[in-house]
Amino acid sequence: MSDSPEKYLELMHAALDGEATDKELATLRDYIASHPEAQSAHAELAKLTEILNQVEELETPEDLHGSILAALPPRRLVAEIGQRNSRSRFRIPLIRYGYALAAGLLIGAALTGVAFKSLSPVETSDIYGTLAVRENAPSYDPVEQLKLDSPELAGSVELRRSGSNAMVIFDLHGQQAVEVEVGFDASQAGLMSFDQQPGDIRSLEAKKGTISFQTEGQRRSTVLLTNEKAGQLTLDLRFYVAGKLIRHDALAGRFPGESPK
Amino acid sequence: MDDNEDLKLVQESRQGSRESFERLIARYEKAIFNAAYRILRDYEDAKDVTQNVFLKAFQNLEHFDAKHRFFSWIYRIALNESINLCKSRRRLDAVEDTRVEENTPEKLMRSTELGGVVQAALMSLGFEYRVVIVLRHFNDCNYQEMSEILEIPEKTVKSRLFTARALLRNSLAKKGIL
Image 1 (tube, rainbow over the protein chains, first blue to last red):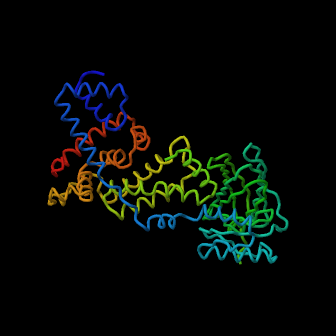
Image 2: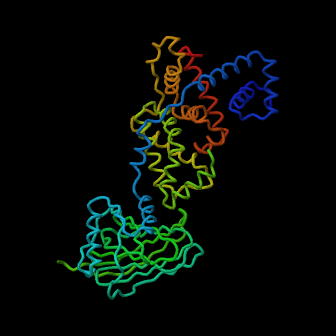
Image 3: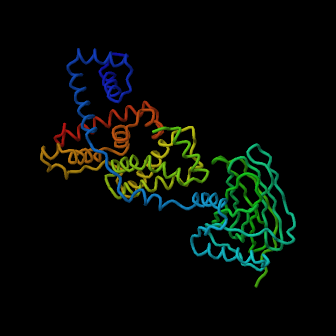
């Protein structure tokens, strides 16, 4: 180190911050001992540090923790509830917003055997909930299929068509939890229903133009969309494992659109 | 804080565990709140920033790079949130506060009053200098951690801290503390 006072001043800061080596501390001690002006500078710096150290840490407001939790969206909660549901099939679903209730009613209709085509589309955004429907859709024709064969995720995703309805069948096999995101043009299509086999009722999150859900192990999940207008429906598919995007692909097909009522 | 434990909690949170994310909140809410308060000097703003920090962290957990420390990442979010709030209220520049001038030396030596004087002195610094003082002295970050949080080289951290202390010392001297 050069003998410039600035260098020693820098060393004083490093020493007070616990960032100086033993050798540097020894050098600094020698310098201070032989330079009265350095002693004064060092004392001032030490005093400043002492004053700052005396300032008490503030306690967090009592309601802060609760307000943080309340502000968190239910997204991960949905996943958590999905896990709980695997142990208890008939839990009351978490439903937010009136639209979710509409979705639930549609699912109820599907469970009682009403044909899909008679259902209105649930095109509205911000649906959070646990939805379930039996996979008993009649006569859906294959449109396009995507094969997945990475070590983290194997299986397939298939797009099928029946009139204005699109069925997306996810046959996935992942060692870890896989988060699936399906993006689409919200002005073109809307969520109709969702199903996951075998057995347990799982959760999904649907927003305008996006549907996401988690799956784990070997599982068949089905998403039904309805096309409100004729045209090309493109599904943007993203698969995440442990937060990392492992596959990004697309499926597409032309749909006639819903018949005017 | 234990970085490995943080990473484990982040991973569990990503896989849907709200409980794990709550543990991350419990670990860092006090530090984030204190940092935000020292930067903004407004109790309610500090609460809002803290809440937003965890909300943004929650929403962006997928983008957290495990090569970095979780606390560096959320501190970075906290600073950005504080900057945004300051910008929205045009408080990014140094604010000279004269309210504490009327304090008596006896009052000033009481810890709570001292906190007020130091806070006023801090607010007289520009944002970039205030932040390094807060990170170093109130959040106990070392140079490397500050470099990571602020995304600037360690050398810049040192020089900024050096200047910040000189400015703070002058400000406190004016207030009769040094």
